[in-house]
Image (cartoon, rainbow, N blue to C red; front, side):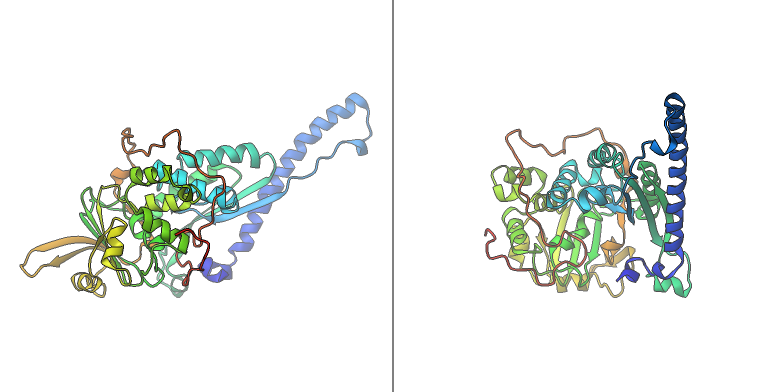
Amino acid sequence: MVEKATHGMVREKWPAQLNKLVWEKRLQRESDSSSNKDVDEAANVNATDAPKNQRRKSNPQPLVLSIGQVVPHEVTGMANYNKNLFVGVGGVEAINLSHFIGAVHGMEKLMGRGNNPLREILNYSSSKYLEPQLDLWYILTVMGPSSSQDNDADQNDGVEMKGLFIGRDVQAYDLACDLSLKVNFNLLDRSPKKMVVFLNEEYHSTWLGNKSIYRTRMAIDDGGELIVLAPWVETFGEDDCIDSLIRKVGYVGTPGIMSAMENDDELKSNLSAVAHLIHGSSEGRFSVTYCPGKLTKEEVESVGYKYSDLERMKQMYNIETLKDGWNTRTDEDGSEEEFYYISNPALGLWAHPSRFEEESDTSNAAQINGDVTISSNQEASDGSGGVGGWKKPPKKPDCAS
């Protein structure tokens, strides 16, 4: 599992070299700090003639290493850095609230941006509460497609390290974000009017499968259509509670979801579910047509998506012959249709450069009325949206229906 997670690099010398780099940086910092301290203490000794062994000695700060990959992220814009500490190990409330803040800010104004309102909250908290207390080091990688054609590239799933950044503050993260934006984004020269995404067997719910929406939404043109071929999708949520909430509210856009939340205590206690509903909504900018293998037309349309028969759509868009990227299909009447195909949305994030232009228009920003409160008693959602999740979601008999 470790070998797969590190793309095979655990077999190489880099972990030891990485440890050596961190240790050398820490020793240099401690040496600089010690030199400054000796100067201060020498002044005190000269003033008081106190013996050297009576100088005050401070306890060293605990060493904390936060290691991870910087990549575009739907919640914090770019993954990793202090997200690991505040969200990753912060518990249910931190997870749910961070997802909620990112969602209401707007995914298309967030993804691919290391500087955003949610990250500003984390950066402030880090500088105020963590950095003064801990000897905190960030070890950040940027991974991308391998440029090598040798066997090692195949063993590493065609992925290699493009950058390694080590530091104690936001500078290392900013540099990693700049590189990730160049490496991990698929920037298209024009926005597709139609995009077709295939979901493999890892995606058995829309909770997971809606990666097809938020990984493509910054590319698809206004008024365009996203077609999701989802043979293994059989449910909406990863557990009974979340599935029930999705069926009750639907992917109906931020205003409708926020309105439903105003009078629903269950939604207020499941902010990650609220965030998921917003993430999976097109906000009316484009349409989503789901083609699931195990959900009915009535079920799909009840949550706000269009439905189309999977087998019919697979004949129109044959995944065995399609290539990732631009394709052209010819109808029976001879007319041609151009579309953009993605075989696995987990492998990238697609966007048009115009989506990164600063927008002064805030008319689409989510509004929360003053009388809306969120519950401090947040509930955990089994399977937080990563690929995989529960193959058989655990039953919760006390879940509200």
